[in-house]
Image (cartoon, rainbow, N blue to C red; front, side, top):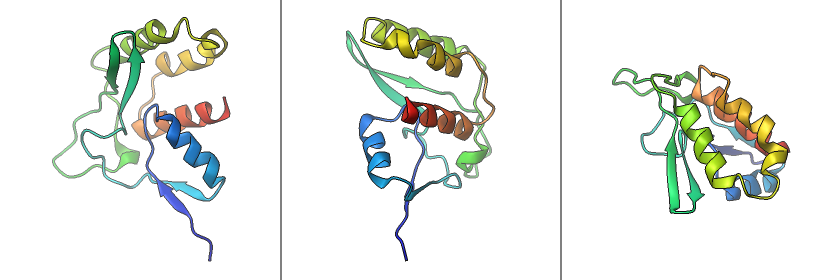
Length: 131
């Protein structure tokens, strides 16, 4: 019997996550039935700005007091977090090599609205994996 890794899905995961994905090849599954734990990288990321580490968060709709499965967590659009994230990414990485090459495709994730956090993270990680 073959061993298969079960991995969580993160918002803008660190480079080590992609190294692990590459090492595993196709021997992994993405967990979508886990419960969303607060203060995890499921909806948070850290980017590096000229002033140091900058934490950004995708806001989620508050659910009932019962645990919500990742596949059912909805993204909140009560404020313009996508614009804030995009402006942060632009100001931090605009002068980086190749930013202009990826900019058009990456901006889609900050202009298009996704209903579920899992779908958003999955599409983003799939795009980052092939880029």
